[in-house]
Length: 161
Image 1 (cartoon, one colour):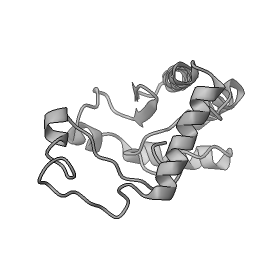
Image 2 (cartoon, rainbow, N blue to C red):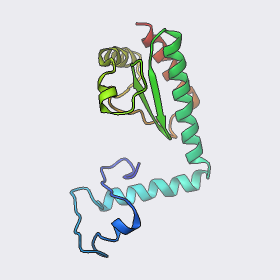
Image 3 (cartoon, rainbow, N blue to C red):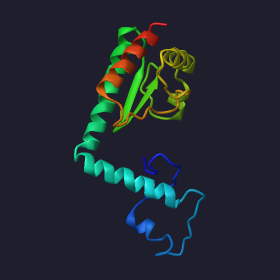
């Protein structure tokens, strides 16, 4: 979202660290996508649109992500699959694992073949998830409750295969 759908790089940190970066401090920082004018304008336009649409846009987005998380968790449980459906604010992840996924090692130990089967089954049903279980789902304000319900239904079907 930071680039409004366009590639953009950003860096952030504590004020005392950021004050060390030029133009305030002596450390020069640059990158191919840092401060890209088009992407920066697009990102600002998205933020302005969110502010205009509704002050509750962010809480709506979190609600949609929560709805997706809860629905996926129930779909997998109904199918008898052990899955860790994780969520951080508006980002949702899926790992077919017996234990909580907290780092690269526990993520790597997940059943990625099971995720691949889920991915392909969803794809056949017209639902497009990331092809790798290491990636995250990004529900958006464009996703309606009906879209999320359809995704959960497709996941329920896919979990049974």
